[in-house]
Image 1 (tube, one colour):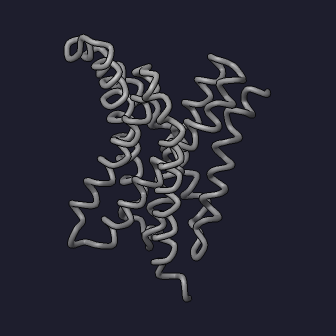
Image 2 (cartoon, rainbow, N blue to C red):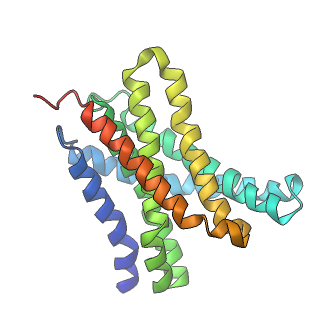
Length: 224
């Protein structure tokens, strides 16, 4: 029971926080739950795709640094952020509830944390309570922050049609790069690089807070 609680609690704490950050027009709970479910369902194609990509890495890389790069950017970053973006797009792109920029953030976070929920349960039940505590402070918030970054650019892509291709591209590449670098720091096991881990998390936190504030301030519902 303790393992399940430490697996699930950080996900739902962040989801509640994001829901209440959407100040001016709340999203339908039913659609948010569909987003969470979409993220959960992403786990299955992600696992399959990651297995395929992992099997190719020894052909592409021979050194430890190369394998760490491949696992971080191609296995984790590429596969996970690709399917998250596909899920968010299918869920909301043409949905009338996607009617302001901040909505992109809300739905992208719900999808991202649906995925993180299952991933977290798997890691915690395999490795124990101490891993649950560690991931509650690092990996789960990181997935949320990757979702915020994705959703920020999706909001711009939706409501600035003249630059749609640019912002839609950034909605994939920016979280992909941030996710890849996050995992690379941990996987490459270079001592000096590990010292960058918590400063990097703080950088992500400050960046995502700035992005959310920007979309909040530009809400079309702010003065209604």
